[in-house]
Length: 503
Image (cartoon, rainbow, N blue to C red):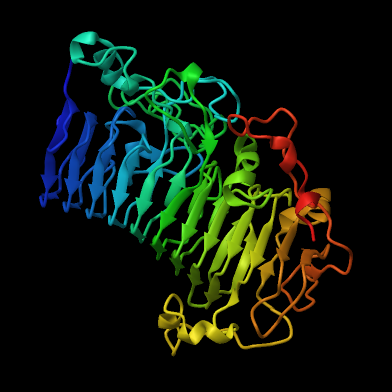
């Protein structure tokens, strides 16, 4: 068995409770910064990684669990070729780097207080899965997880102290929530926070192995991320010590508290989710007290494998795949907070300021979307209590340009994309909803904004946007299907139709 060479490395350590890598500085390493490989219960705390090559903080085989990655600083990780994703997406991205600050193959760890600056991908989640569907929205048990690389054989051997029946070999990463709070991602070149990109192994038969890099389907190199047939993430609570056949699964949200994603570059990528402040294939993420600031690209959501069905129960409103509460989106005049694609945005008790538009269309979308719904949300300063609310008032007083109060909201959305002109999908499905208006200044009842049918139409809500005068309708592109499984003993039928959530 060959052992990789890294500056700081837990190699097939098993239970490492009480062990730590703490307050180290690693600069210009040729192969990563800190690697956890087949390790449980270790602390990676307070380290600085500068100009290291390859994914900097690296969970190698997807079996790693119970570790704490806290208060680390990663600055400007550089291209490598140890695994394909260290290198470039060579086809559609035009030889642009894909290296990340934190590479997460198992959510069953704690990530808190970390900062990543100047990575191509700030934080990248991708999990092993043994099931050919790669999506955990069925009652198939035990297959939505797996083990990569050397750990597969090592921990299956009883001599390791574990063996095939051990919990470490029966994890279901794609059904497991994570602890992710108080992390900061700044200056990402392509994506701030990325949940996508199926890889099928952590090592290849040769180095570098780049065949298939940048393709949608995984190629001969198992470490090259595929994005067309990718994994999805349906967080649930379950007893990991039980046999998979005896497990009960209850949907639960992923709580990403106090996250800052800022100063992301204006990436030219808009393929397979690349080029977003946040992109997710599932995850049921709830951002609370988040700040998305000065990002060249907005957040965008996939609707992979009907994950919105489980989101009915985790987020509380049907049809949406991610949620922001008590959050702030800010810019300096030319930014857009969200890029509407398949997945639905649920935004509550949040504000925005300094944006050119709150929402725009993702350039590859025809308008087939689950849209966005806003509640108790609006431009910063349009609520009377904003000046006394510590979550928001720090951005007032001249720090960010505030939206002048008016009888409409001219920068609500930009639906002037040439892609959606004349498309039935945009006519039937494109929408944005407010349940109560835009602050104390502009109160409304439940109101839908729909596509005006032409890129040059502007009725005071942004180009291509019209305030609907009709009764609320179910405009969502994807609603729950009859065969969808959301969790053990969960009745998905009560959340099939978006009409159930209309006023």
